[in-house]
Image (tube, rainbow, N blue to C red):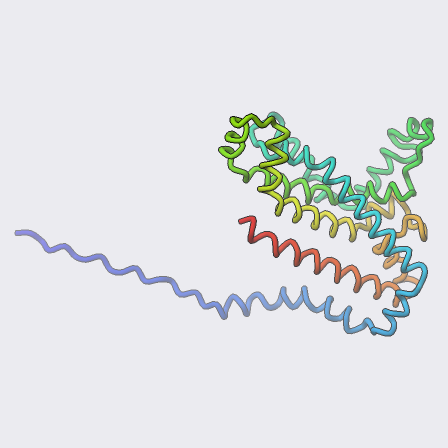
Length: 271
């Protein structure tokens, strides 16, 4: 006598109350939002416009924009080969190289500044040779660029490496079969197919360089009109003129917000 098969009981989906997660998310989201809101509530439009006409504020804005653009250009030029190297996980010493690239992002900025000063400063590791060649780096605009690049370049390198690694190997092989050399494959196949990662990484690098403070003040100093970037002017303005600090803070928040909008607009296309 056969026993009738008992049909399996249907699996009931687990209901997750979305309202509960929204409620639990509120404390941290409010914590993120309140300081930004407080800053904008405190900044009066008339005071902002008056501060923008200040010569020191204009110098800080101009220096920040110039140095960060140079930083991004140098990062793209020097960081792209590193990103291409990291896009190949089976190369020798891949983990060591990857760790070295990540290190500046987790170092305290003050440590980065001291390390740069002890390397390129007048009494640093390379200071004697640079002085003999008539090259002075510390406490110059060049030091500003180097400090920014040290802390910000990893953002471009990691983003570009992910983009390069995502290019289909068959497409590169097909291009090489058609007679393209390695440089032509990289220029005509790899770069066009990973351009969103390159742009996203460049924007993140620019935004990080724009907000750099700790390494810059130790390695480049806070010389008005020479090495004083917007974050350094905010630090000085907080002690002397709060309106100046508020003006530059609002500008930095606006630029950071715009850069994140650009990156987030590009990322869905990458996926």
